[in-house]
Length: 260
Length: 302
Ligand SMILES: Nc1ncnc2c1ncn2[C@@H]1O[C@H](COP(=O)(O)OP(=O)(O)OP(=O)(O)O)[C@@H](O)[C@H]1O
Ligand SMILES: [Mg+2]
Image (spheres, rainbow over the protein chains, first blue to last red):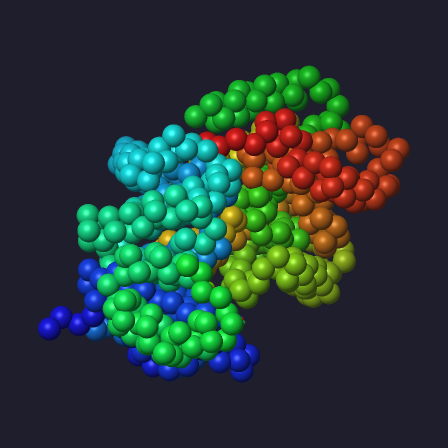
């Protein structure tokens, strides 16, 4: 059996003594759309930060295809094929939408700073090719006419899509989405659901989806892991998990509203 | 490629200056202005492109100048040997300041740079055996560069090369990476940029150019004294960048020219120039944070 593409083994993270994540283990298999859900403050974004190398775990391991990558810095995780989006959208605001994507997809080929400085024909071709790929990607997300706008000038919905386009353009093996439906209008949520499916089905990207909006989780996830107070309380197909008493307790019993 | 052509044209026009300005005094002012163009343009690599404020640029300027003076004292070398050595020494110290600064952001980075600037100044002023203390060291200019017009052309050539270098650098992929770091460093890392290495290299390049400017300064005024390389000098260079416009090629150039030529024109007020710079800095940050060039060209995507 091939090892899972991504594994968390006993991951813990404390912030100044406050335990945000406590001995969490789960795995994501190749080609899966795995969900990670839980109430506010349950530690979901912390998981994303630990896997993407933005934070270093207090203990435990992050394992990719059987290889221990715990503590690898973010740029190395990116080069290993982990792409991510952010709960609070992050784009390079003073760059055009196209440049935001071109920049991300150029990171794979290595720096090439010197040839780019001297504007060698190869460097120019490479730059032009990145622009073409970026525009194709934007077309896929219905944003081609925004290509030369500044990223800061787009609407929230459009900015979310640019984040997805940026991640997909870098040809990731695992794409982690941190609450991509947050702040989206209902018709944009439908579009998001469609794009998440297409990224897996047409581009073969394995997806770890952190989400609050249950409609999204239930319609795209093969499996969900449920967190509460930094601990895993359930792991299984979405239809089963939502009926488990612990999960209902975590979401409803404590009066923390469940977003439908 | 329009900008380099305009730069070449401007330089060609500037070549006529010694013929027009009959007095050597004004040629001296022009040389100082050019040296500050190099300083402001190189500081803008950090301030405008990478978004890191530094009040240590005069320290690197001074390290270049003192490298020239000390090399000449020990080996009797000339400008052409001092330029690469001064740049290398300044780059080395740039890395030295860069390393502990990697984790610092915003104000903390600025404070760290002021501390570094102060330490460099104190060493230059106090380590008398090495630096000549408050009296500094003399620098002898080789006879073929002794004429002020000749030295002007040498400085003009160096300034042209430095500005072209900054233009090609900032328009290349390296410049894109610096912009990415300025906009969002976490995101830059997350898409695969090794931002620590990039920041160190940017620091080294920026410092090296300031070191080169220092070598020119040492030869121009034929000596070095610590008081030319204080935190006031650093603040002046910062003011030039802010006045002209951060992250715009012409911004620091215009800022440097205004702030070196203006005090000469208003020479009665020269005593108060630091007060004026301070007031100007506050005014610019409040009213026109994008600088003169920024305000003229407006905001637009590439
Ligand atoms: N950098 C940090 N420093 C200190 N505390 C943090 C940090 N990041 C997260 N926390 C804390 O850790 C806990 C888990 O936060 P996390 O952001 O992972 O939750 P979440 O499940 O993503 O919540 P949400 O649904 O609101 O996004 C929270 O109590 C939060 O305040
Ligand atoms: Mg979160």
